[in-house]
Length: 399
Image (cartoon, rainbow, N blue to C red; front, side):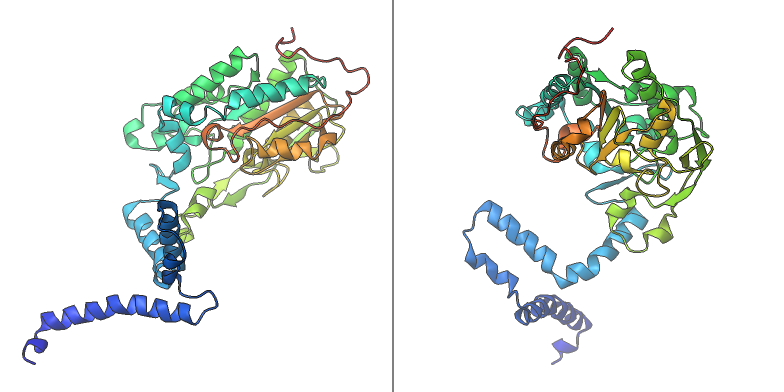
Protein backbone atom coordinates (compact mmCIF):
# COMPACT_ATOMS: atom_id res chain seq x y z
CA UNK A 1 0.00 0.00 0.00
CA UNK A 2 2.83 2.34 0.80
CA UNK A 3 4.35 1.83 -2.61
CA UNK A 4 1.04 2.51 -4.37
CA UNK A 5 0.88 5.92 -2.73
CA UNK A 6 4.08 6.86 -4.54
CA UNK A 7 3.17 9.49 -7.20
CA UNK A 8 5.47 7.82 -9.74
CA UNK A 9 3.56 4.53 -9.46
CA UNK A 10 0.26 6.32 -9.79
CA UNK A 11 1.46 8.13 -12.90
CA UNK A 12 2.71 4.86 -14.39
CA UNK A 13 -0.60 3.14 -13.70
CA UNK A 14 -2.47 6.07 -15.27
CA UNK A 15 -0.50 5.80 -18.51
CA UNK A 16 -0.81 2.01 -18.57
CA UNK A 17 -4.57 2.42 -18.25
CA UNK A 18 -4.60 4.82 -21.21
CA UNK A 19 -2.51 2.44 -23.31
CA UNK A 20 -4.77 -0.49 -22.47
CA UNK A 21 -7.96 1.49 -23.04
CA UNK A 22 -7.19 2.28 -26.70
CA UNK A 23 -7.14 -1.32 -28.03
CA UNK A 24 -9.93 -2.33 -25.64
CA UNK A 25 -12.25 0.40 -26.94
CA UNK A 26 -11.24 -0.41 -30.52
CA UNK A 27 -12.07 -4.11 -29.90
CA UNK A 28 -15.46 -3.33 -28.36
CA UNK A 29 -16.35 -0.89 -31.15
CA UNK A 30 -15.47 -3.38 -33.89
CA UNK A 31 -17.17 -6.24 -32.07
CA UNK A 32 -20.44 -4.32 -32.20
CA UNK A 33 -20.04 -3.47 -35.89
CA UNK A 34 -21.06 -5.59 -38.87
CA UNK A 35 -17.49 -5.81 -40.24
CA UNK A 36 -16.07 -7.70 -37.27
CA UNK A 37 -12.76 -7.31 -35.44
CA UNK A 38 -10.06 -6.11 -37.84
CA UNK A 39 -7.20 -7.34 -35.63
CA UNK A 40 -8.37 -10.94 -36.14
CA UNK A 41 -8.14 -10.67 -39.94
CA UNK A 42 -4.46 -11.62 -39.76
CA UNK A 43 -5.53 -15.23 -39.17
CA UNK A 44 -7.59 -15.30 -42.39
CA UNK A 45 -4.71 -14.97 -44.85
CA UNK A 46 -1.18 -16.17 -45.48
CA UNK A 47 1.52 -14.10 -43.68
CA UNK A 48 3.13 -12.79 -46.88
CA UNK A 49 4.77 -9.37 -47.11
CA UNK A 50 1.95 -7.83 -49.25
CA UNK A 51 -0.72 -9.25 -46.93
CA UNK A 52 1.05 -7.95 -43.83
CA UNK A 53 1.43 -4.48 -45.36
CA UNK A 54 -2.26 -4.46 -46.32
CA UNK A 55 -3.16 -5.65 -42.80
CA UNK A 56 -1.10 -2.87 -41.22
CA UNK A 57 -2.72 -0.26 -43.47
CA UNK A 58 -6.17 -1.62 -42.61
CA UNK A 59 -5.41 -1.29 -38.89
CA UNK A 60 -4.35 2.32 -39.42
CA UNK A 61 -7.44 3.21 -41.43
CA UNK A 62 -9.91 1.68 -38.96
CA UNK A 63 -8.34 3.04 -35.77
CA UNK A 64 -10.80 5.37 -34.04
CA UNK A 65 -7.97 7.11 -32.21
CA UNK A 66 -6.08 7.59 -35.46
CA UNK A 67 -9.10 9.11 -37.19
CA UNK A 68 -9.65 11.41 -34.22
CA UNK A 69 -6.08 12.54 -33.68
CA UNK A 70 -4.57 12.46 -37.18
CA UNK A 71 -6.04 15.76 -38.49
CA UNK A 72 -4.88 17.64 -35.41
CA UNK A 73 -1.42 16.11 -35.50
CA UNK A 74 -1.21 17.15 -39.15
CA UNK A 75 -2.33 20.65 -38.20
CA UNK A 76 0.39 20.90 -35.54
CA UNK A 77 3.04 19.60 -37.95
CA UNK A 78 2.01 22.10 -40.60
CA UNK A 79 1.50 25.13 -38.35
CA UNK A 80 4.53 24.65 -36.12
CA UNK A 81 7.00 22.50 -38.05
CA UNK A 82 6.12 23.53 -41.64
CA UNK A 83 5.78 19.85 -42.54
CA UNK A 84 3.34 19.00 -45.30
CA UNK A 85 3.21 15.22 -45.05
CA UNK A 86 3.51 12.77 -47.95
CA UNK A 87 2.19 15.05 -50.71
CA UNK A 88 3.17 18.62 -49.82
CA UNK A 89 6.46 20.48 -49.56
CA UNK A 90 6.30 23.81 -47.74
CA UNK A 91 8.49 26.22 -49.68
CA UNK A 92 9.57 29.78 -48.98
CA UNK A 93 7.66 33.06 -49.39
CA UNK A 94 4.29 31.34 -48.90
CA UNK A 95 4.73 28.86 -51.76
CA UNK A 96 3.74 25.18 -51.63
CA UNK A 97 4.79 22.33 -53.90
CA UNK A 98 3.48 18.88 -54.86
CA UNK A 99 5.98 16.37 -53.43
CA UNK A 100 5.52 13.60 -56.07
CA UNK A 101 6.29 16.18 -58.77
CA UNK A 102 9.41 17.29 -56.90
CA UNK A 103 10.47 13.66 -56.46
CA UNK A 104 10.16 13.20 -60.23
CA UNK A 105 12.39 16.23 -60.84
CA UNK A 106 15.06 14.95 -58.45
CA UNK A 107 15.03 11.32 -59.63
CA UNK A 108 18.12 9.94 -61.33
CA UNK A 109 17.46 9.74 -65.09
CA UNK A 110 18.92 6.24 -65.40
CA UNK A 111 16.56 4.89 -62.74
CA UNK A 112 13.58 6.77 -64.20
CA UNK A 113 14.41 5.45 -67.66
CA UNK A 114 14.70 1.89 -66.41
CA UNK A 115 11.33 2.16 -64.68
CA UNK A 116 9.76 3.31 -67.95
CA UNK A 117 11.58 0.99 -70.37
CA UNK A 118 8.26 -0.57 -71.41
CA UNK A 119 6.26 2.58 -70.79
CA UNK A 120 7.91 5.09 -73.08
CA UNK A 121 6.28 8.51 -73.56
CA UNK A 122 8.09 9.13 -76.85
CA UNK A 123 6.93 5.84 -78.37
CA UNK A 124 3.32 6.61 -77.39
CA UNK A 125 3.51 10.17 -78.73
CA UNK A 126 5.09 9.12 -82.03
CA UNK A 127 2.45 6.41 -82.46
CA UNK A 128 -0.33 8.94 -81.81
CA UNK A 129 1.27 11.42 -84.25
CA UNK A 130 1.40 8.77 -86.96
CA UNK A 131 -2.25 7.79 -86.43
CA UNK A 132 -3.31 11.41 -86.70
CA UNK A 133 -1.14 11.97 -89.76
CA UNK A 134 -2.95 9.10 -91.49
CA UNK A 135 -6.14 11.14 -91.02
CA UNK A 136 -4.57 14.34 -92.33
CA UNK A 137 -4.24 15.87 -88.86
CA UNK A 138 -1.16 17.54 -87.37
CA UNK A 139 -0.05 16.97 -83.77
CA UNK A 140 1.35 19.71 -81.56
CA UNK A 141 2.60 18.59 -78.12
CA UNK A 142 2.78 20.91 -75.12
CA UNK A 143 4.39 19.57 -71.92
CA UNK A 144 3.65 22.00 -69.07
CA UNK A 145 6.58 22.38 -66.65
CA UNK A 146 6.16 21.43 -63.02
CA UNK A 147 5.99 24.49 -60.81
CA UNK A 148 9.23 23.51 -59.08
CA UNK A 149 11.01 23.38 -62.45
CA UNK A 150 10.31 27.08 -63.05
CA UNK A 151 10.43 28.29 -59.43
CA UNK A 152 13.20 26.37 -57.63
CA UNK A 153 13.98 29.60 -55.77
CA UNK A 154 10.58 29.40 -54.07
CA UNK A 155 11.33 25.91 -52.81
CA UNK A 156 14.10 27.15 -50.57
CA UNK A 157 15.93 30.41 -50.03
CA UNK A 158 19.20 28.53 -50.67
CA UNK A 159 18.17 28.32 -54.35
CA UNK A 160 17.43 32.04 -54.68
CA UNK A 161 19.86 32.46 -57.60
CA UNK A 162 18.37 29.64 -59.68
CA UNK A 163 16.01 30.69 -62.48
CA UNK A 164 14.77 27.29 -63.63
CA UNK A 165 15.76 23.63 -63.52
CA UNK A 166 14.86 21.02 -66.12
CA UNK A 167 14.84 17.43 -64.92
CA UNK A 168 17.40 15.28 -66.78
CA UNK A 169 14.58 12.88 -67.61
CA UNK A 170 12.49 15.70 -69.07
CA UNK A 171 15.45 17.01 -71.06
CA UNK A 172 16.01 13.54 -72.48
CA UNK A 173 12.35 13.23 -73.50
CA UNK A 174 12.32 16.67 -75.14
CA UNK A 175 15.45 15.83 -77.14
CA UNK A 176 13.98 12.53 -78.30
CA UNK A 177 10.72 14.19 -79.31
CA UNK A 178 12.60 16.71 -81.47
CA UNK A 179 14.70 13.92 -82.98
CA UNK A 180 11.45 12.16 -83.92
CA UNK A 181 10.20 15.36 -85.64
CA UNK A 182 7.45 15.91 -83.08
CA UNK A 183 6.39 19.54 -82.93
CA UNK A 184 6.78 20.65 -79.31
CA UNK A 185 5.83 23.89 -77.58
CA UNK A 186 8.81 24.51 -75.29
CA UNK A 187 7.20 26.22 -72.31
CA UNK A 188 10.34 25.56 -70.29
CA UNK A 189 12.19 28.02 -72.51
CA UNK A 190 9.24 30.43 -72.72
CA UNK A 191 8.68 30.54 -68.96
CA UNK A 192 12.39 30.70 -68.12
CA UNK A 193 12.87 33.59 -70.53
CA UNK A 194 9.88 35.43 -69.07
CA UNK A 195 11.29 35.03 -65.56
CA UNK A 196 14.73 36.23 -66.69
CA UNK A 197 13.17 39.35 -68.22
CA UNK A 198 11.05 40.18 -65.17
CA UNK A 199 13.11 38.86 -62.26
CA UNK A 200 12.28 41.03 -59.26
CA UNK A 201 10.44 40.90 -55.98
CA UNK A 202 7.39 42.32 -57.76
CA UNK A 203 7.38 39.93 -60.73
CA UNK A 204 4.04 38.53 -61.83
CA UNK A 205 4.27 34.80 -61.07
CA UNK A 206 3.47 32.26 -63.78
CA UNK A 207 2.16 29.75 -61.23
CA UNK A 208 -0.09 29.96 -58.19
CA UNK A 209 1.65 29.95 -54.82
CA UNK A 210 -0.79 27.49 -53.21
CA UNK A 211 -1.59 25.36 -56.25
CA UNK A 212 0.07 22.98 -58.70
CA UNK A 213 -1.33 24.96 -61.64
CA UNK A 214 -0.33 28.03 -63.56
CA UNK A 215 -1.53 31.55 -62.91
CA UNK A 216 -3.44 33.73 -65.40
CA UNK A 217 -0.06 35.10 -66.50
CA UNK A 218 1.13 31.57 -67.27
CA UNK A 219 -2.10 30.87 -69.17
CA UNK A 220 -1.67 34.00 -71.27
CA UNK A 221 1.96 33.29 -72.13
CA UNK A 222 1.22 29.67 -73.07
CA UNK A 223 -1.75 30.65 -75.26
CA UNK A 224 0.31 33.26 -77.10
CA UNK A 225 3.15 30.75 -77.62
CA UNK A 226 0.82 28.12 -79.13
CA UNK A 227 -1.00 30.62 -81.36
CA UNK A 228 2.30 32.00 -82.63
CA UNK A 229 3.66 28.53 -83.45
CA UNK A 230 0.47 27.40 -85.21
CA UNK A 231 0.63 30.52 -87.34
CA UNK A 232 4.34 30.02 -88.13
CA UNK A 233 3.66 26.43 -89.22
CA UNK A 234 0.64 27.60 -91.25
CA UNK A 235 -1.38 24.79 -89.70
CA UNK A 236 -4.08 27.18 -88.53
CA UNK A 237 -4.88 30.57 -89.96
CA UNK A 238 -6.43 33.29 -87.80
CA UNK A 239 -10.21 33.42 -87.91
CA UNK A 240 -12.51 36.43 -88.06
CA UNK A 241 -14.10 36.36 -84.61
CA UNK A 242 -13.10 39.15 -82.28
CA UNK A 243 -12.89 38.30 -78.61
CA UNK A 244 -12.37 40.64 -75.70
CA UNK A 245 -11.35 40.18 -72.06
CA UNK A 246 -13.38 40.95 -68.96
CA UNK A 247 -11.78 41.04 -65.49
CA UNK A 248 -13.20 38.29 -63.28
CA UNK A 249 -10.94 37.93 -60.22
CA UNK A 250 -11.48 34.94 -57.94
CA UNK A 251 -10.17 33.67 -54.64
CA UNK A 252 -8.76 30.14 -54.54
CA UNK A 253 -7.52 27.87 -51.81
CA UNK A 254 -5.01 25.87 -53.79
CA UNK A 255 -5.21 22.16 -54.50
CA UNK A 256 -1.92 21.61 -52.67
CA UNK A 257 -3.43 22.97 -49.46
CA UNK A 258 -6.45 20.72 -49.92
CA UNK A 259 -4.06 17.75 -50.07
CA UNK A 260 -2.98 18.52 -46.51
CA UNK A 261 -6.46 17.60 -45.25
CA UNK A 262 -5.70 19.81 -42.27
CA UNK A 263 -8.53 21.27 -40.16
CA UNK A 264 -8.56 25.03 -39.92
CA UNK A 265 -6.16 25.47 -42.84
CA UNK A 266 -8.10 28.54 -43.97
CA UNK A 267 -7.25 30.20 -40.65
CA UNK A 268 -3.55 29.58 -41.21
CA UNK A 269 -3.32 30.36 -44.93
CA UNK A 270 -5.87 32.72 -46.50
CA UNK A 271 -7.06 32.00 -50.05
CA UNK A 272 -5.07 33.35 -52.96
CA UNK A 273 -6.34 36.31 -54.97
CA UNK A 274 -6.22 35.30 -58.64
CA UNK A 275 -6.70 38.06 -61.28
CA UNK A 276 -8.40 35.94 -63.95
CA UNK A 277 -9.94 37.44 -67.10
CA UNK A 278 -12.88 35.90 -68.93
CA UNK A 279 -12.96 35.74 -72.72
CA UNK A 280 -16.12 37.15 -74.27
CA UNK A 281 -17.41 37.75 -77.80
CA UNK A 282 -16.91 41.36 -78.77
CA UNK A 283 -20.21 43.14 -79.24
CA UNK A 284 -22.34 40.47 -77.52
CA UNK A 285 -20.41 39.97 -74.27
CA UNK A 286 -21.23 36.24 -74.45
CA UNK A 287 -18.78 34.00 -72.66
CA UNK A 288 -16.50 31.90 -74.84
CA UNK A 289 -17.87 28.47 -75.86
CA UNK A 290 -16.26 25.56 -77.70
CA UNK A 291 -17.34 24.80 -81.26
CA UNK A 292 -17.53 21.15 -82.48
CA UNK A 293 -16.86 22.40 -86.00
CA UNK A 294 -13.53 23.95 -85.06
CA UNK A 295 -10.36 23.07 -86.96
CA UNK A 296 -8.42 22.34 -83.76
CA UNK A 297 -9.08 19.98 -80.85
CA UNK A 298 -7.28 20.29 -77.52
CA UNK A 299 -6.51 17.25 -75.36
CA UNK A 300 -5.32 17.93 -71.85
CA UNK A 301 -5.48 17.57 -68.11
CA UNK A 302 -6.39 19.89 -65.24
CA UNK A 303 -4.18 22.65 -66.67
CA UNK A 304 -6.82 22.94 -69.38
CA UNK A 305 -9.65 22.79 -66.83
CA UNK A 306 -8.49 25.45 -64.35
CA UNK A 307 -10.33 28.78 -64.79
CA UNK A 308 -12.05 27.30 -67.85
CA UNK A 309 -14.53 24.86 -66.33
CA UNK A 310 -14.25 25.97 -62.71
CA UNK A 311 -14.37 29.53 -61.37
CA UNK A 312 -14.75 31.92 -63.04
CA UNK A 313 -15.26 29.81 -66.28
CA UNK A 314 -14.23 30.83 -69.81
CA UNK A 315 -10.97 32.24 -68.42
CA UNK A 316 -8.55 29.35 -68.95
CA UNK A 317 -6.03 28.39 -71.61
CA UNK A 318 -8.71 27.13 -74.00
CA UNK A 319 -10.60 30.42 -74.11
CA UNK A 320 -7.42 32.49 -74.32
CA UNK A 321 -6.05 30.40 -77.18
CA UNK A 322 -9.33 30.93 -79.02
CA UNK A 323 -8.94 34.67 -78.47
CA UNK A 324 -5.42 34.60 -79.90
CA UNK A 325 -6.52 32.54 -82.92
CA UNK A 326 -9.72 34.57 -83.36
CA UNK A 327 -11.73 31.36 -83.63
CA UNK A 328 -13.23 28.83 -81.20
CA UNK A 329 -11.67 25.44 -80.54
CA UNK A 330 -12.92 22.05 -79.33
CA UNK A 331 -11.52 20.57 -76.12
CA UNK A 332 -11.44 17.26 -74.26
CA UNK A 333 -10.15 17.44 -70.68
CA UNK A 334 -9.38 14.62 -68.25
CA UNK A 335 -8.10 15.69 -64.83
CA UNK A 336 -4.89 13.82 -64.07
CA UNK A 337 -5.18 11.81 -67.28
CA UNK A 338 -3.05 13.75 -69.74
CA UNK A 339 -0.76 10.83 -70.54
CA UNK A 340 -3.20 8.07 -71.55
CA UNK A 341 -6.73 8.54 -70.18
CA UNK A 342 -7.56 11.55 -72.35
CA UNK A 343 -6.60 9.62 -75.50
CA UNK A 344 -8.73 6.70 -74.40
CA UNK A 345 -11.62 9.12 -73.93
CA UNK A 346 -10.98 10.48 -77.43
CA UNK A 347 -11.36 6.94 -78.79
CA UNK A 348 -14.89 6.94 -77.41
CA UNK A 349 -15.58 10.30 -79.05
CA UNK A 350 -13.85 9.79 -82.37
CA UNK A 351 -16.22 12.28 -84.00
CA UNK A 352 -14.12 14.97 -82.30
CA UNK A 353 -11.48 14.41 -84.99
CA UNK A 354 -13.73 14.94 -87.99
CA UNK A 355 -12.78 17.97 -90.10
CA UNK A 356 -9.88 18.75 -87.76
CA UNK A 357 -6.52 20.05 -88.90
CA UNK A 358 -4.63 20.07 -85.59
CA UNK A 359 -4.61 18.23 -82.28
CA UNK A 360 -2.91 20.10 -79.44
CA UNK A 361 -1.95 17.60 -76.74
CA UNK A 362 -1.09 19.04 -73.33
CA UNK A 363 0.21 17.11 -70.33
CA UNK A 364 2.04 18.18 -67.17
CA UNK A 365 5.74 17.37 -66.86
CA UNK A 366 5.43 15.04 -63.85
CA UNK A 367 3.19 12.72 -65.88
CA UNK A 368 6.28 11.74 -67.88
CA UNK A 369 7.15 9.61 -64.87
CA UNK A 370 3.95 9.22 -62.83
CA UNK A 371 1.07 9.55 -65.28
CA UNK A 372 -2.08 7.54 -64.56
CA UNK A 373 -1.93 4.31 -66.64
CA UNK A 374 1.47 5.43 -67.88
CA UNK A 375 2.01 5.89 -71.62
CA UNK A 376 0.05 3.25 -73.43
CA UNK A 377 -0.36 3.15 -77.18
CA UNK A 378 -4.01 3.79 -77.88
CA UNK A 379 -5.27 2.73 -81.33
CA UNK A 380 -7.85 5.16 -82.68
CA UNK A 381 -11.01 3.58 -84.09
CA UNK A 382 -11.18 3.44 -87.90
CA UNK A 383 -12.59 6.55 -89.48
CA UNK A 384 -12.55 7.62 -93.11
CA UNK A 385 -10.50 10.76 -93.82
CA UNK A 386 -12.50 13.88 -94.57
CA UNK A 387 -13.12 14.44 -98.32
CA UNK A 388 -10.24 16.12 -100.05
CA UNK A 389 -7.92 15.71 -97.03
CA UNK A 390 -4.38 14.71 -97.93
CA UNK A 391 -2.49 12.24 -95.76
CA UNK A 392 0.46 13.75 -93.89
CA UNK A 393 3.94 12.33 -93.85
CA UNK A 394 4.62 10.71 -90.49
CA UNK A 395 8.09 12.23 -90.23
CA UNK A 396 8.29 15.26 -92.50
CA UNK A 397 7.60 18.72 -91.13
CA UNK A 398 5.68 21.13 -93.34
CA UNK A 399 7.73 23.88 -94.87
